[in-house]
Length: 254
Length: 324
Image: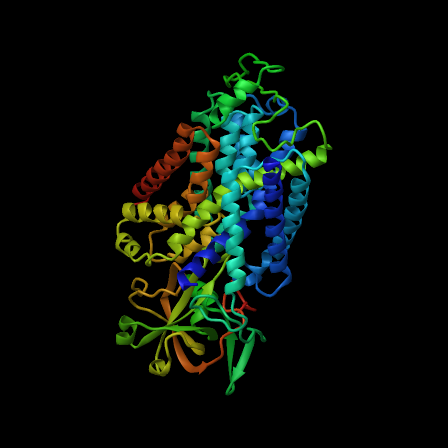
């Protein structure tokens, strides 16, 4: 009977994980863990977990292994804690994101008669790495969070950064660009801003400044270009702060 | 709940959810092999020579891409069915990289640098082939942790064919006794084949998923540790940068689809160190170390960790010397 119970528990564990995965796919929080382009894959897996879990729980010859039951029960408790800890609204890069406004809009925007290309910080980073002359002639607007430190303050810079998630949260990298020029003193650490400006090459590329986005292991700052702002606007936090897509040319994902 | 603990939990959940489709696929394939494929079928149809078998192992990922989390379960089943190491282990080490999805993501991450793509493929192919060929003379069943148990269970119905043409080892084709070593009851007398398939899939998923979760917990712990500032101290010297990036790849345990983007973000590091990151990561990381230890004989597991690490380091440094 005990052995049979073990088989049932294992089946139920799979069912619970399948239900959680399905709930994540159908809800609005999938992006907190994974790139939304994988929703269909998670949905399929959820179905398979439900099916295999059900069959396993009903299997009269099922035998559980204590070590894997313990590990998975701990994992299921993590799922419960995560659901419990999730805040209902708002987004920030410190700890769990909260929701805010969505990042949407046309590929270009005109402000005070000047046209700017909407581009995210990762796409801007990539364009800088390419060092193509055409990039320097363009005007861009990018959205990101402000990061400052002593070294940057002394140089009259701040960094505008956003987190890029390629597959899942575990591979998240903060990617940003230095911003140099007027208005840098007025921005606050952690504030979300839209920076309108042009790119200028950095004559003597230096190693990445010591900055770390809270909760992210790695941060990359463009070494070959910096953004010279024509204007900086404080904006509310976006609903989904992460970048999930990087495009090579217009229209950029922004 | 503290912020660090929240980040830890989020990381564990994210890694598991990301890997679970591939783990499920690997478990399903493993179950299909177990239930539907006769013990000696694969060994009969696969190329007999070591070189053709190795080439098959290297190229199979182009038809059947599988991430590193799912392939270990599949390869365990292949070895139990008598597929020689030069095909099975080569496939296991190569498929996370030599597949269309990862090749495309590498190309995109390094902004069209075909040299990086080809170098990644070449170095992984060399490492995978070397390890597969090194173990090709060993009975494939004995490569597994439960190898001796399986050989002991192979009483009725087992047979030992003669030397296979081309110098491949004489594999013992293990016809399983009614009670399988996995203990999930999948091959009990009752129940349809489909039921047995699903039960076995569930069991395999839980078994390999255990190690995936333990590895994810290790990665989650590193996620909340102090920042990796020490890396910047290494980047001026190529051989140190290569070692540092390799260690980072093993610790971060990023999946092979995403690791190129992570490596590319280290733009201030020497390109060969970025290459070493994307070569070693799909073959050795925290999750895989645990899986290897669970599936393979201890010495084989050690070889699967040490050999790719050493080969990657030596090959990247050799390239550094050649390119100077």
